Length: 200
Length: 397
Image (cartoon, rainbow over all chains, first blue to last red; front, side, top):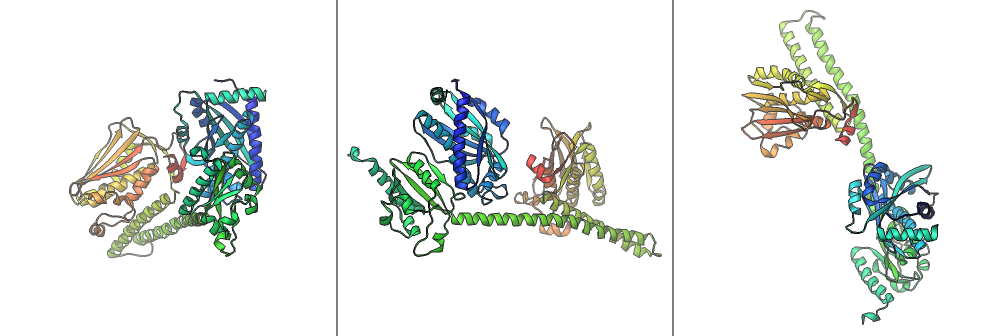
């Protein structure tokens, strides 16, 4: 596995989440803070065990494919009921009422995922001085098994994942979510060398 | 020739196609170039904004739609740089504030969500009118909360009804007993006979009320499961004993085949017995002559046990096989007239079996009798003694 400066990577996510929080606060006209309590880097085959420790039940996921200098999959994972309460808080009770992820709540969650994933990944782009672009976000409510299946890539290249535990804090409430960035060895190598160059 | 096509031409071509497609699909389309100048829009936009494409094309996006918030403009900037962006209805309810000169209320209150899709040298905004969807969701939410309120009312009704119905029936039977015992003066033989009839009818009414209440409690998810250790053979044998008098009265043979050794179960004994009595009672009720066979069989390695009730009754036609588990159903209307009951027995039994993590199935052929099988887990709902509500058990199964 490529050696990655985890402190620098954490800082990169921190900056990204700070930007995301600013965007979310602007859109919702309320103060939203997005923290980064913990970050893990691991081979993709090991993510199932880790995610099962972190998440349970049905998950709401926002999935985006990104391409450019670094390419891969970016997923925001939140337990379904927490996702509903997050959208409820963000829309002043309009969406996600009664813990249900209806179409309006899903759309809001997709936008939140779009903002958070975009802010974190564009950090890589800025750092590498190269463009990273994203597909339209797609939202799913699924079991963890189905989420992992959607991430399976048929490739000779080793696959890795960065899992970032996040916390959305607003209106005296905190909702836990997880960002998962899955990349191939080559992309991770690029991130690693850029971190050494610019971060260290 | 292809080399002569500039990115701007390409954007224009794709945008024109998207506009046409948008009109077919009822979606608004606006194309902008790298400088956020509108290069194209479709008829949907013209209709909603009350402005013509000729007016809008060439205008800076912010000038054409001054109500767009900085966040939306920033989103367009990200899109022209290559990243797709979603602007949800929930966070941008009146994204493009359409107030056409025609003054149509519909447009002025239109709720929108938009997808910004990057294109070569620009971006496309696909705007969807979600007013109706949002209204529909609102209606559904109302319906849900009304249903919730109705459910709560039903639960309260059940709690009070179980008391209100049982108490007077108990009083009827009790007073009949007291009168029969001569407590209020001497009674004649005929009066004793009538009093016995009153008691028997009251008992029957109490059973029907109980059946309806169990059904309603299970339906409302309020039936509780009380788990304890029991011997399956003992449960079966006590159920058989309680229907034996009816079988003897009808001249039916009741064959009971139990396991040779005790079979320990961790289950709700009252409910298991109730299911078995229901099935045996039904078999006796609907079998005019012959025998009712009752057997207990542990199912190897599956951790389950099966209770089988077979009869030599008229059988059930194939098309009625599932219908018999629906509430208030008896197979034949001519039969239902000659066989009293609520038609809830099988429905309640199946619900209870499922509540305990098992099931109730039937195999039958007209003229060849019926075979009801209850399968139950040997250990219901975990290894420790606890109380579970129906909703919890349903979630665990």
